[in-house]
Length: 179
Image 1 (cartoon, rainbow, N blue to C red):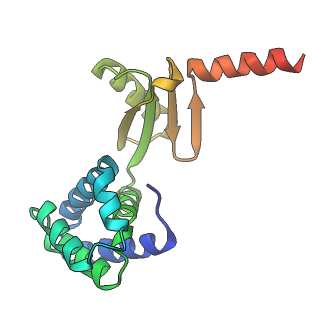
Image 2 (spheres, rainbow, N blue to C red):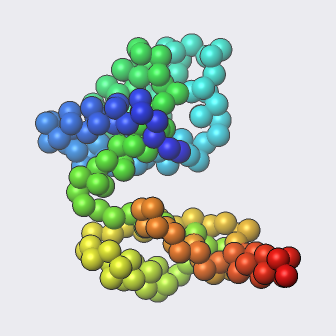
């Protein structure tokens, strides 16, 4: 998911309101949950995109799915439904998480591996990211992509370090095809 301009505007408004209400941390948890839920459910994303399903049904389903979330999150769902922008919910949640982390000075590093990483390796990666960025507030998001065969891909903001076996094989392939 990626934040569009409209999604970022909604996310900023929710963040400001949550900060004013002194519930930003709670709403951060909500938005992280919403983002992960939508990322993991193709069916739910399809429901939100569908022009056939009534907005009132979408609202009812979302409020039930996310019933344990804060009033701010419920208000966001209601506003998006009223403005006929409920399909943006995942992008708004993603943008909120990014804005919140940015405001708190949290650096998010993403590591992609072919197999799940152990806690020991995760700690080593976190230590390296902290060393590279100089920040003590770093969170690590890990994902698995078997197509990289082995090694890892580390992303910190706009920087990417690709130490995957697939990348090395592609480099070799390019070298042999050029000559």
